[in-house]
Amino acid sequence: MSIHSPLGAYLPGSGPLHRLRPGAKLLGLFGFAIAVVSTTGVPLTAAWLGIAVALAVLAGLRGRDFWRVARGFALIAVPLFAFQAWQHGWERGAEVVGDLFAMILAASAVTASTAVEDMLDTITWALGPLRHLGAKPERVALAFSLVIRAIPTILGVARETQSAARARGLERDPRARLMPLVLRTVAHAQLTGEALSARGVGED
Image (cartoon, rainbow, N blue to C red):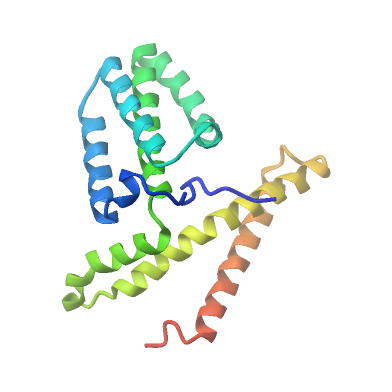
């Protein structure tokens, strides 16, 4: 069974977002997030959501992709809205949840329109000036790449662990769900480290 990363997957295309340089998209995403958190009010939240949906459509996301993003976000959106509505009213709850969803959709638009390799090249280039301070941009990009590639694996392990606990009637026992997840995640990290060491990565 394929496991989708919450960061989304690259969708090849030739639209305006695909032609934009990765650095410009990252700066744009940063500016969009600042604008969203700096403004208040349900009408503005609706406007940000509309812009984010338009960006996602330009990146090639369609109905099933929106559903995947919304389904993952619902796990935190529902209790977050309930708490904010209880404490400050439904308008505040709608504003907080809507702002977060707008930023998630905008980030999904960036990942859907940018190949991972291009993103890593941009990170390496952006950190280039820090070489004089002892930084190693290639190593940072490698770490970033490993994190991205590990996310679907860890999600798969979590799902398998949950299914195994449910089969034994222990779905409500946190130890039956967390301990195997932690142990298998650590084992995966150790295997990854050994593979990198066998290829001479990190010996300099």
